[in-house]
Amino acid sequence: MPLPGPRAINRDADAGGTSATHEPPVVRLEHWMDWWFAARWRALLTWTAFACISTAVIDSTPREWVGFVTSRLWNILHSLIGYSPPAAVLEVSSALGVMCWFQPVCLRLGIIRSALWIVIYVAVGLAIPTVYPLMARRFGAALFDALLLMPLFSLPGLAAIGVRTRPWLSPCASILSSIALYVLWSPSGSLIAWVLLANVPYATLMLYGTRRIAASGTGSISDKATEPPV
Image 1 (tube, rainbow, N blue to C red):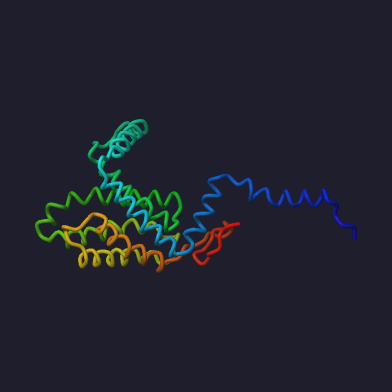
Image 2 (image 1 turned 90 degrees about the vertical axis):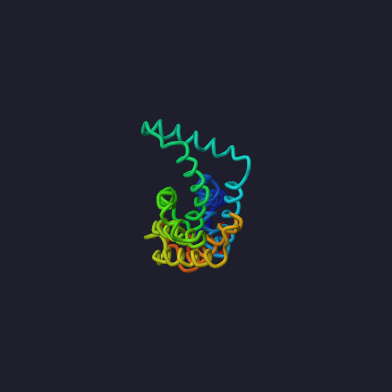
């Protein structure tokens, strides 16, 4: 049987390396994120780190970024639908978005479901002030925050339905975070302590209690994969 010549070998080698070396940057980033978040401990550390960074951004002074984001949102909404909510609503929405954007990313829900997660989180966060006067008179500050944390976390987590196993753990995880917040946090505590007590229990149960459902034929990395992509 005749052996292939050098040109044929080189041609085959070049063809085999084309897809790996010439992938679009977005695809390579997606593959890297799949690998990075496949290890649950890395996903939990990343979730915690982003929670701290986002809190520092929100709690920082000066806060010029709020005015920049608010003006950009106002212009985008006006250009798309001809209407924009008041600046105060956009400012609160920006802060809520900063506090939650990393959560669906660490769970690897995909672009559409991540956007849905953020929209639900912001909507629930905007609805909280409407019940604040009624609940604040009936409950103490710690219990009030713990009670409001449950819908703020559990409802966005339903976006994981169809993407991760046992999505019903989202309400359970939010209850766990609410208990931790009520028991360990005081109203005089710092904002970053509040955010960590709210996020870490929820993230731990959602990351370790659920598993990503890899779509067939997509080559997605499951939660059991720990080797870096080649």
